[in-house]
Image 1 (cartoon, rainbow, N blue to C red):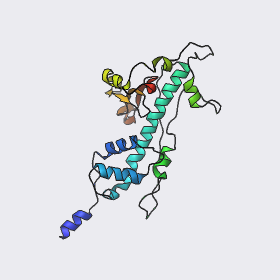
Image 2 (cartoon, rainbow, N blue to C red):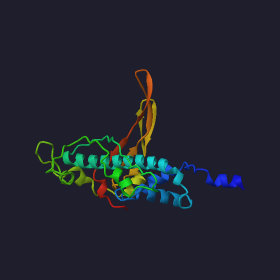
Image 3 (cartoon, one colour):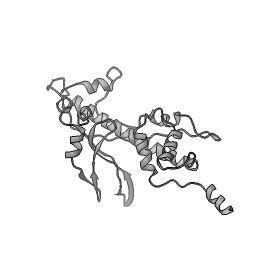
Image 4 (cartoon, rainbow, N blue to C red):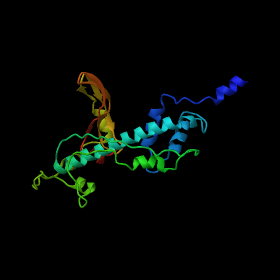
Length: 237
């Protein structure tokens, strides 16, 4: 009986599939209004666990959630920047997004911080953008709405976004587009197709790759992202 009691009281180990489930949970949430407690509760539900079963895994869940929020922000910001920036200057470019976000700490003795926990991370832009500069009088929405523009005030007619916004549906893209491979150092990375949370379509991969630097081996986090300009406007089918 004592052994059974000890077994019940022992800390829960977070299942290996938890990270993927948390990623899926966050994809369907408004990150500015989601709390860590909500994430944990839904994770327990999806793992068929009782309420509070993952209380001992709060810190690990918080770390996974923080990392996933940062990744989603990078992905969305890079997609928006690529699509908006390329259309504004009619440039076929690629972007790199870097940055970090942090979930607020849970006060000692409380079950959870408020909904601001995840919101604090979501509210922080986690991206350093490269591309056309914006001013206070020229917001992102205004830039994305511009058509043509050769960069010197000369109109070239409809921009890339306008030409491609009815090219196909997202379903058709997924049916016809294929993954491609990129060589990074000694590793060949497969970049699969993806429909981003912004509804834009393209290709995305964020592998960790080992590289040599000054005779030493280092691990680098890579992000490969290609967004089809105008695809955010495509119909679902």
